[in-house]
Length: 234
Length: 242
Image (cartoon, rainbow over the protein chains, first blue to last red):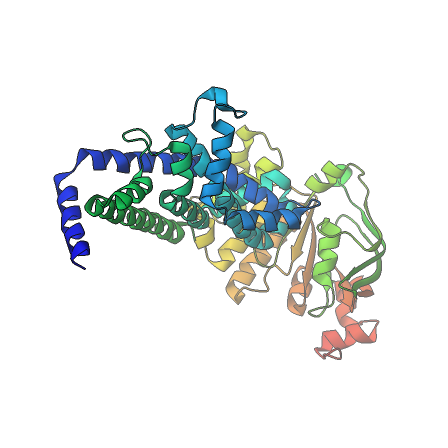
């Protein structure tokens, strides 16, 4: 317990001092994960809505697959992206391995199924209510899907938040494709893993606190926006 | 859109519809012509709503044929609109809900606003044009649904029990709007189980019982002298089917 107490005191000290290294790590974490979630939302929301509204062969299998992909192991995604981006890989010439863009790619792949699958479920539930009306007005297929996504946009905040939580919390993918290079690709989770193994518990713990606090603040903000919007639009 | 350019008459030939092994519409043949307000009358579960959806094209008949005079699918689709028992409003303003429908109907952008405001004026909702549609009262939402349908200037307007969820005051307002649409030349096809409403709004009655068209008559004749035992019982308020 004394270790934990020391670590807590050290963490508070680091945070109070506004350690610049700490700031850089937090900033990179946010930049990488928010970019990945933005990309995944741009791709995943229309994809989920299209699967919800569409009727095509193999649809049920695709839904099962998409739901299963929500549990993609981050290390496996990291490994696959590593193989794609490594010098000998198909995308090796782009020279992205061990850079923040590589981390964004890996996290996008990780988050995309979460956002698409949750969006698919929400849109499908809404479709039951809207289908006849939209078909009567002449909105079919893609048009109907986009209308639904826009109309339940406040509920979809939850899907995007689930994706963001996943991106901020994962360590396996970013550590493989980013390489955890000091000052370049070191993010909160990879630093926590490294510092813990090195025995620098104060730094690891303070990053842990900041990570948890960030997730709570982001969720609270999103929740307040959602509530206000629902009061306004019904 | 009415008169010479109308997509009417609508012809149903031996239309059947079954779902889950249960027959819901059982061989209905009828012609729906331009002009008189047609009331689809029957008890709950008689098949009124399904019949309306078949006519509007939301459901395909299991067998039989539903044909409009006009052959072009696009013209047929745009020549009709439907208002449902429970209106589904999008999470945007009342005005934007109508603009959305006009956009889907490919009304030129420059004319949408004027047409939408005109429709809102017709149903007395100009004051709430900028309010979010979903926070309007039930009666206001149903009037907005009528405005949204009417803004499309359909030749035929299908109304599926439009007042079933409303209080008497809101019902009266809706009925006045329907009368105004009828007066403007829109063909009204309305389902209801409300006898008073059928009398107030209808010119002719199609009485549906257990998925069959049991009787068709002018409103006066139907209520004064129903020809079938089922219709007579329904008019008297008896419920032999329970």
